[in-house]
Length: 313
Ligand SMILES: Cc1ncc(C[n+]2csc(CCOP(=O)(O)OP(=O)(O)O)c2C)c(N)n1
Ligand code: SF4
Image (cartoon, rainbow, N blue to C red; front, side, top):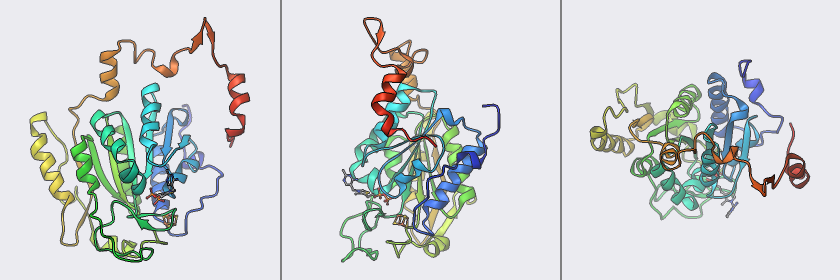
């Protein structure tokens, strides 16, 4: 791309209809800034989102985007990346979507280590469906939409990501936009599966995890001296155990920053290339799909079939 990408280029004219004050605004802002500073080519960048309030973000960023199904955003993202490994693929997904119905896909993506970034909007509730408990809500808490306190234990997203094999694992906070922007940039630049758990106040349905609540508790792991880098493969068990311990910290402290970076794992695209020698030269997205030497679909036919689903900005 010849011209430097600006935030203005990245905005669409779709009305951002989140509740005023929602933490999603901070995440959107960090995404704009990260994409602009990395000067990503919008033609080669895809934002994949799940359902829920968080899922709307794909409509607000002027790159390619797919607003997918409950629990299946990572399956779409992997299909896109494996078909066309040149693309930068960033997933934005709710905590209910990713760690409820989508939990198996979350684990599978970590095991494969594709070069994909997963950003989880962690608001402890199912926002769009009016505040039911999500898998990150701790036991005995009662945000205002619950008639009685939660009787399920919470998942530890950072711990699950470590166990699943993600090779870049971080936590951000929607109100620390500059910090979050840096995390997103580093996650995109990382080679392999990156996961960012973003603390995102839902001002409408979660009256416990408010901005005040987080402002009093968050501290920066890197400012506190934590070095997340695994310097050689033998170091991983020890480093992962220490990162896990940090993700369980109590005493009213919540760590943000990078927990773990493990650069010693092959990506799934590299594993595919070892198995299929032509994969990187001619990935599926560049293969002609033909029957008897003739394409099964051309541009005109595609437009005739799908034109009513194509939104031109
Ligand atoms: C298969 C299926 N079941 C249920 C729904 C209804 N649904 C829409 S949004 C949503 C909650 C999303 O919560 P979360 O992923 O935490 O995202 P948030 O709205 O908090 O950003 C649900 C259950 C759906 N869209 N599809
Ligand atoms: S319901 Fe919550 S998560 Fe959804 S837009 Fe409103 S404040 Fe944000």
